Length: 123
Length: 107
Picture 1 (cartoon, rainbow over the protein chains, first blue to last red):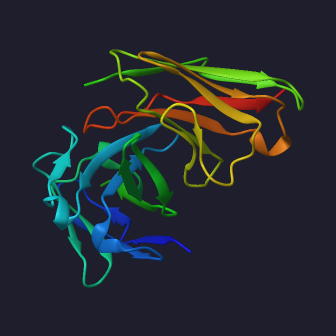
Picture 2: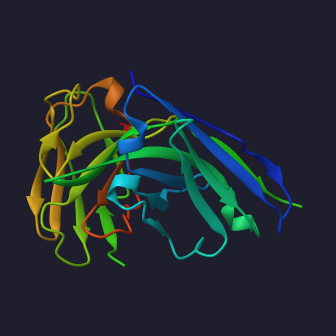
């Protein structure tokens, strides 16, 4: 059974930092592309960024609002995905989900999601 | 960036109704369009990928169609568990944008 379990959320002041983790099981983590998606309270879904598998080059891409402030990384030995967030703003307040980004001949889609972890940026 | 626009933003319907939700892309995305269902307080779940392919375990009352810029999600006969928010999402570009969501409520 595929499981994605996020952790590390909490309350942080504007300008602060936080690191989220996503522990994965039930699939070959090292082969997976992984994505962070966030959802502000009462709002829709927003793509944050994606990291490819090392065999596919390990490329990392970010959405414009977080580029330069957020860093996605992975530890394939621990089956864990990370999201390091710095210079946090109030508008970064959201539930953060990790997802598997399945890529194939029919495009790409997020087939497995974690339960999410809430990040609140407030003074 | 490719903009995804869903209509309607909200919809009231009854159990047994046939419902259609529309998603329009700001440019052609071929069939690189996915649909997700999100229930209150839960993570989204994949319903349909590549415009018309049903994800495993998803009831056959859900179907998707379209290509290019215009897509639809149809629920043939609404069940109580279908009342949720639905999102379309394009995977044509690296920046995977979502529609704003359609909230399906009980009439």
